[in-house]
Length: 116
Image (cartoon, rainbow, N blue to C red; front, side, top):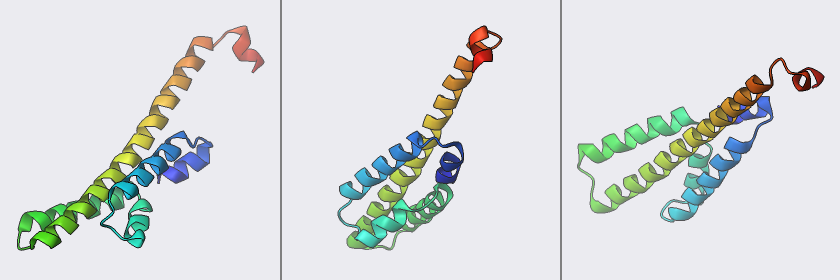
């Protein structure tokens, strides 16, 4: 979802940050396979959030051995970082838009604004 909005506006600042955060997440979690890392990196916010909820529920329900618990924890960490990176990208875009709006508001009605 964020990628589509960024493509529509031409602003990729937040998307680049999300990609950097996703890369950092992949490097930090060596217990996940390359396919799992790629899959998580491709999730949109809602998908990552929903999978994170399911992962937490699995951990809270108990019944997992130590290895299974650690695996679910690693997956949960990757999902949480993915969701956070997408939120950070949106936050960056909002701040940028607010700054542009404030800047345009101070120049509104001036000769310089009319010449643009």
